[in-house]
Amino acid sequence: MDEFNTRKPMTLRKRGIYLLPNLFTTGALFAGFFAIVQAMNGRFEYAAVAIFIAMVLDGLDGRVARMTHTQSEFGAEYDSLSDMVSFGVAPALVMYEWALKGMGKWGWFAAFIYCAATALRLARFNTNIDVVDKRYFQGLPSPAAAALVAGFVWVMLDYGYAGESVRWYAAVVTVFAGLSMVSNLPFYSFKDLNMRKSVPFLVIFMIALFFILISSYPPGVLFGLFLCYALSGYVLWGMRRTAK
Image 1 (spheres, rainbow, N blue to C red):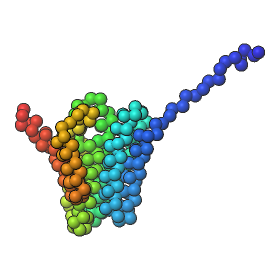
Image 2 (image 1 turned 180 degrees about the vertical axis):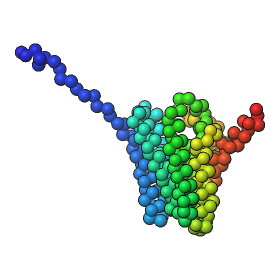
Image 3 (image 1 turned 90 degrees about the vertical axis):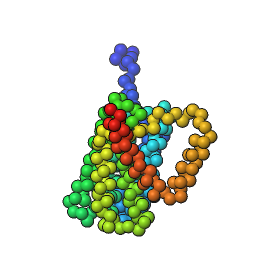
Image 4 (image 1 turned 45 degrees about the vertical axis):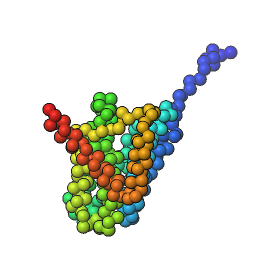
């Protein structure tokens, strides 16, 4: 027997991709892409709702990965790219097509501030993930910023306002959301809530009331909810400054 044939052939180790969590990430990416397409076709209500759907799917992929022990570097990078589309490009384009287009350079400038702020926010989050206090986000999270922008579009449409009539308000909301993302303000992350612990019956009742409230008027309740969350960082920062 030839001695050179006694060696075992070298095998290349293939890296697999976990299917389940990345399905949710792909769904969030599709919802963001769908929002862009609908905005280009003038269906802004569908576009706003799609951004909220992307936010829900984005919140599920990480939880599913942790529950099934399928976290991976690929999933983390894929999630960031999906977030950039769904919570950066899509909200900026929806707001621009709906209200900011008639403002000329100021319109696309406001939309770009938001889009660039999302990219910076995601990059900072990825690099500081093991450094910052996990109880608080550093800057407004990009899904919450996208929900604020999409919620504004949705509620204005529901009240019958055209984008041109509220374009300056739209610009303020867009720039405010963008600057809040790149700020150092603390926003409560809710990561210290333990869902596995037993809770009083009143908590379950309040959660049921919360869903009833949202179902009663989704555009206004969701916009109000995320507006309050966006302002909470400024309130918390002011409280900390006062306490010093």
